[in-house]
Length: 493
Image (cartoon, rainbow, N blue to C red; front, top):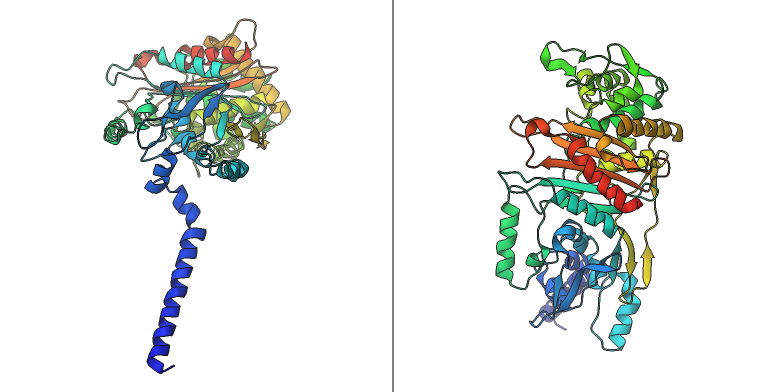
């Protein structure tokens, strides 16, 4: 073989090798990345031709595929769209969100758990069907949460309510309810009329009230006085205080390194004594002066350490996203520690985070990982994978948890959290009214609780971000208490 021919042959051989390497790289190493890419239209078009699995709450499907008479064969439908929209998310030609996204491999039938089913379908020449996702949600609790939010008066400027509810089973971390307002209809985004889909998506994404936002896990706000549970936990854990003992009182408290009204903490007219008062009274009356003083005494490091034991500054929700991270400020000085101790300054929390605080106290101090996917099932409802409860760590000792429970029960029976009381059931709870930091934005109303206090079945967090409530009437107990009560009753009765 002469030299020119040999050169061309070697060059062609190198081209074939490069082509084989590129094909191997694309079809083997990168295949899953392309399959999982939400912008891959081929994958979406193929998925539209298959029967996607159902998302189940109890025995009912809250998302399912029905036969369609167009080129895509199946249409994704949501029988109770507004109530479950932020959990199920939507499956559209352009994108997926919520459970539709996080469990897409199962629902589409591509998960390895469904290999046998896929093989049987292939051998029998049947079209494939995706697996089912069974959620942990309690339908009665979800009904109660959504109905209670819907009863809130609407903001006259926006015509809607911005609020959310989360309920957790303290012993396991199962999410029993997750509702958010404003909501939307995922059926419109799953439509095969792609022009209408784009129009509706543009409308929702440009809405200033952000109806696509799952406020239960994607919105962080100052938790206000509900954070006093964390501060009380740090105080009791320090060994310097007991639930039956005395704590600093007083009508006002001047933060260190400050002077005048800008650094003065008051109690907004509540009865908080003068010098030392019972810890129960401080919690019942939600005394800002007490908890600010405790925060300064304990220091920012101790507060942050305690907050992180409850889950702050962490991502712990693995089966639904995206999750906003609750935050306790780093490197806070003394006056900032005092403000942080009452849930202000730069402290931010999601409703899920504050439900976890209540749940950890209820569970004798043990913090459980929250989860919303109970099991993965085959198309024939055979359980392929069951989620097992997982401990994240000890937030407080059992003794401290007992002390906190004692204080929170007293707050429901004798204090500001009384609107969450349930006849014949011992309830532990705490209210919060957090300043937004913007004089034009009204405060946020919070309520956290768990019940029955001595044998807890459910922990709840409620936040009302915006509603048709006069600024002077906004209070966590008045509006959040009845919502939490309705959800707790739905679970325990």
